Image (cartoon, rainbow over all chains, first blue to last red; front, top):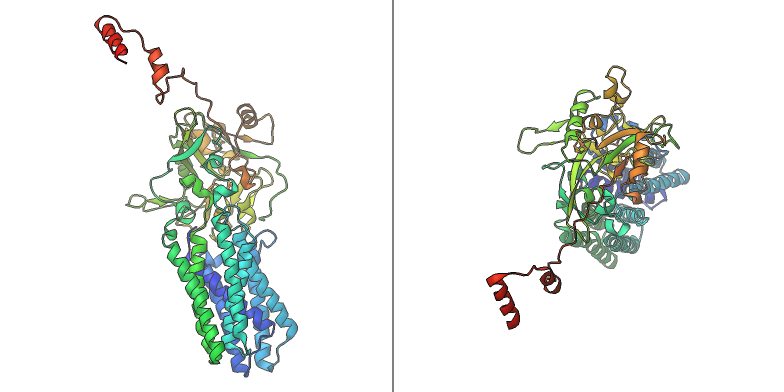
Length: 303
Length: 252
Ligand code: SF4
Ligand code: SF4
Ligand code: SF4
């Protein structure tokens, strides 16, 4: 699949934003007055909104985006839009009350947290629902999206908030997320199109005669389908990107958290861990798209 | 509405005969022509006369080579357009309701004024039957020529999809799959119409008629093992050649 920069940025950024919203809604301790409350809420809301805005760049007609809220009965993309907007509204009110009164309304916070959880889940389901991309179609996909959102949100919260010993939790969540991702990668390696029973033979129905091979594409040039779904250039640097994802997304943040925990360095240093993890997740998300095989590729000469 | 109708009154679709298709691309060209002139918006191209032409097509002709275990390879031309699936995933994923399946005739359509161009429906289609229009930025797909088949102004013989109308080898047939007496149902029953990628669970309406079996030529000597069989089949030479043949045979 074509790794669209807007979608990669969207899933990583809004994942971290909703992760942070989830934790704040559950009462992640943040000291200081209205100023701090504003700053932390802005970080959560801002990342989520930035991601959502980026995702509209990927649309052919962003001015009609409001129409995407109508088909929640059948469409995960529609559900995601609704969940995101509701969550941001709830969290906006929560943040206002918090800044205004200094008190954090627990029920409202819990609702915003639930909304954040649902939003990230619906984002993941947009991919996990597609039978055409067997590597995505697994409950591991939402598990990975949720755990990355939680881990990156936690790193941000531990940098901006005041939870003593948040580093330990951070290390645990980062490791858990990457353990799930490792399982996802192992499964993806074994879940090529051929593993789920799709081949040029089933795509053409000609397998009863013999082995099927594409002789000639319909047109000499590229088209929307080959650019979007038979995209293979993005796989060229897969190995180095995977190493980069693990280095920036796992090793560096864990190292920083350990140093902070051991030396008692000020919590804002954890921001470096969060930023490194987000960069690593951009590489991870690139691979999520670039390495995914779509059924259409069977009509364009891929086995 | 992007929920699918439980059943549709008619199930209009195409039967494509892979035995008679000659891969001429006339159906794709006529489709492009019709849908560039008569649709809500034209079926666009970019850089059509330049170095890197690209554009949206609703029908494309692939060519495959099929190699049986015991015979030489054969070529199969393979036209592919929307199969108007009963269980169309491209409809249910659409967030706007632009992508829909009509309950009266089962045709899967995109309402271009509602489409936000998110591309998700094209991701959901296993067959590559949807393409984003590079100029209009909305999703395009085969409409089964709704603007021809129900036309009241076109001549009667033109009230069929443009591809069917134009095919020079009558490889394309249009009709109602719900009617067991229809031309398409009869063809599918008689020739064993194929469903593409049944494992994807889309329940496509369109069917493909498989190439008829090749007449097998008389068995030929196996080039890999010429010794016994080939020698026995070699006719006896006469005269000088016969003497030479016998002499060489004696030498072993
Ligand atoms: S062929 Fe593709 S676009 Fe057409 S109905 Fe089936 S899934 Fe949808
Ligand atoms: S591209 Fe248009 S028709 Fe397709 S899913 Fe998006 S809004 Fe619906
Ligand atoms: S017009 Fe007929 S023969 Fe020519 S490619 Fe299309 S289906 Fe095949």
